[in-house]
Structures are given as C-alpha cells and as structure tokens.
Length: 199
Image (cartoon, rainbow, N blue to C red; front, side, top):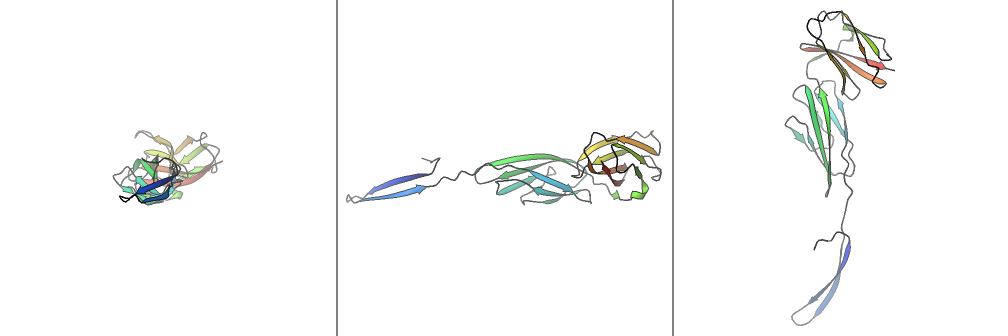
C-alpha cells in the first residue's frame, strides 16, 4: 500500500515462541507544489548568442531544448545558435514529483553586423510612431527593414523588392509600446543597426 497522506502505523511482530513486540512508524508524505516554468532572455551584441534567465519557481532541475539539436541542464545558460533564424526554445522545469514546460520563439540574426550609425539617419528620435529613415549614405538598395524590441524580439518587418529605389523611407510604428528599439537595415551580407526611442 502506498500512502497518499502522512500516517502513523502500529506494527506488531510475533515470534515463533509467542513473544510479541509492538512499535510505531510514522510515514511522512511530501507533496511539493507544481513548478511554474518561465524564463526571459537577452540577445547579445554578437547576434547569435543569447543569455537565458530562468524565472521558474518551485523547481529543482531544468532541461533546455534550443531547437537546434542541442540541450542544456544549467539553470541560466548562455547559448550560441548556429545560424540566423527563429527558434522555439523549450524549458522543462521539474521537482521530485511534478513538472512544467514553457516555449518561446526567439529570433536571432547571424549575419555580420555593421554598427555604423553615421551611415543612416533616423528622425525624429525620439519618435511618436512615424519614423523616417535616410539611407542615402548606404549607396545601394536595401533588402529588408526590421525592428527589434529591448528583448531582441522581432516586432516589425518590411521586405523590399529589387526594383524599389529611393533614399528616404518611412515606417509607421504607432502600434508599438513606448520604449527603446533597434532598427536593422539588411542588405546581402551586412546589417546596419541603430537605436531609437518611441515616446
């Protein structure tokens, strides 16, 4: 019998010579709470490297699945993804009896970045949502504009066909929350990035 609550048992033992011994045994059933798996993350300046911050409660062991064929068991891993893309990262948080799972999609950019703010002009900055981008100093057409929030999550993306030209572009970000964002100008094998503020 497997007890489901803490119980005190009385045990009686009788020997072949009719000697009787009586003792008590207390069985304590430990029923820990169910873990709540959760985490945050920060995309590092290298683009492919991500610092994971474990926010789980009531858990003692962890298993990270990075969706790139690798796993880890440390509480707060620093992971280097092999390629740019979007990865569904899973955290399994467990204690001795129960477990919980959380999954988040993380976008990383593995192209070599050119951090050269003087090559683009963003205005107004801070902005109330309408952002103008002067790309005349880039010297060639661009492929894509992306906007990342402070957690490195992709919140805006606009692709451009090869026949689109022009040196002044505008994007409407009025639907985003106030905060600091990163603008990525993508072309072939480079990225130019710049910070801006939505007020």
